[in-house]
Image 1 (tube, rainbow, N blue to C red):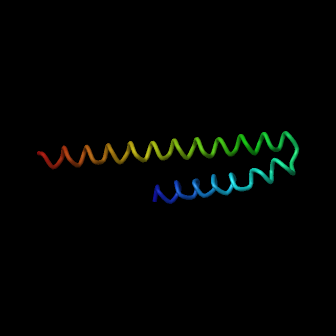
Image 2 (cartoon, helix red, strand yellow; image 1 turned 180 degrees about the horizontal axis):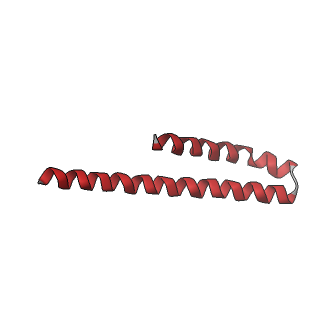
Image 3 (cartoon, helix red, strand yellow; image 1 turned 90 degrees about the vertical axis):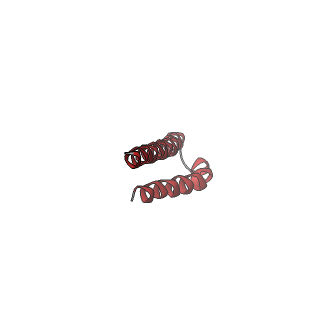
Length: 70
């Protein structure tokens, strides 16, 4: 289930990146700044979730390996 949310946020970041040139050409400066802040926030949040997912999987593997040794 966690990967579904990561994939959805990844798709959102890609769609926002595709529409960025259009937004820069057509919108006011403040709207462009807001758009870019949202884009950067989405990418950073997605990267943080990916990092957390990797850490959780590593912890699960460590607990599985230590449980099998006993």
